[in-house]
Length: 100
Length: 174
Image (cartoon, rainbow over all chains, first blue to last red; front, top):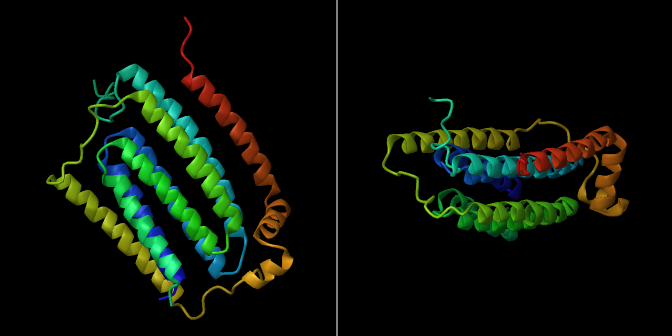
């Protein structure tokens, strides 16, 4: 077992932790943090594969993923502020206008 | 053999990720997420991806997490913590699902790295990158020769994101 394998297993663990945050938590900010965790897992996987395969395209893709994550969190947090303004809470079990 | 720095940083990242998911108040999960990003930047630095390490520390641990902490501060959630019910069967089912995802991905990765005739490695070994002039030079060369169209589209996406965040977050004037 070399350090590349450790980093691959760590990236799988980070992805499943992000999934768990997305499923378990009701707080929308923590759910967004779960999405960030999953994006970080993919970044780690890209960098580890790029090192193991002696290529650079993975690191270029990580640059794009980080940029898209910044845009995604900016738009997501502004949506959250709107949700808080309309419902008085950002928990997912309070935002139930479609359930009548 | 595992480099000890990588092992220590991996353990730190794993603990902080679990703390992010299971901690009670959103502000403590935000701060453990910040520390996790910094430790991940350390892992990228050890792996030789220096440009990505700097980007992770600046953009993720700097900009994105400041945005998170700021909106937590703005939203004042006093009664919104401790909502995971550990005894419920839904929680157990979610943990089983996440554990199966972890097991499947780890099996695939271990299978991949133990495969004898995998994909052939490229030419950019660490020595080659060092002879070009460092990681930043090599990555920017690859970015602006193969991925410049994506780079332009990313700048357009950032413009759209700025405009939409402004429109969404501004107070309605009526």
